[in-house]
Image (tube, rainbow, N blue to C red; front, top):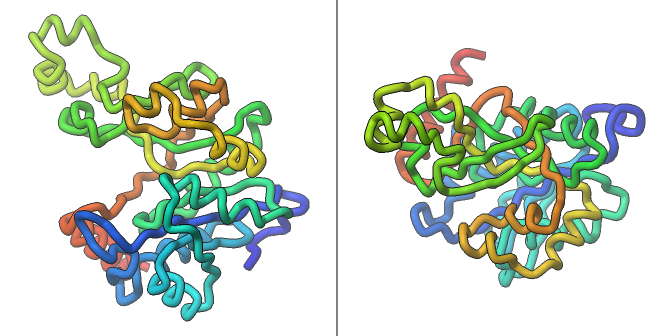
Length: 272
């Protein structure tokens, strides 16, 4: 289902969407309904709406998800249930895609991900031939997200290459924190400090050869310390291009997220 002449405009770009049935907070999450269709199908629709994407494949270890995707006329692949990470699941499918140059990892719980965000991340990797991966970031709008270890922060250099990812608040505004007594107090007193922070979001574009190599490396010290897989790439010296997402997306992790996404989806349909 190609949207453009990829031979002249883009290398071959395939989206792989890892999807597991078991979720601690939302069991059966990929099959929950968004606008009358299972969430995983909404993610596939968004992926195929990207101009650069030639195919989208759901990678799952669950027969229910596989059957729903295939019954809707989309591609799905059954993968091993023993993968430690989503990247490992991605690599299992990518290993069989010999004619593909770029692999996009779109999370299976992002039913509102803008197609232009995918295109933007792909173009950034194409335009940066020395980078192995591109990924996306968004603005942070509140002190709570800066301080939360569940919100991953990223800092990049002048070329837009990742310097570090952390669950801690980085960069740390030392003088402001000293002046106000704590970082939290500083962020509340001076909202302009929020502009220093970027939230890392879960979209990745990999050069296929790098994905297959990187997933064979053992876990690294920093990766284990922060529980952030992308630090394995940085510890090996891989260049990661960080892209500003053109617009925000919302991952569905909780019942509250699900209700919000359902409302947003309905309002988008009404405004079409």
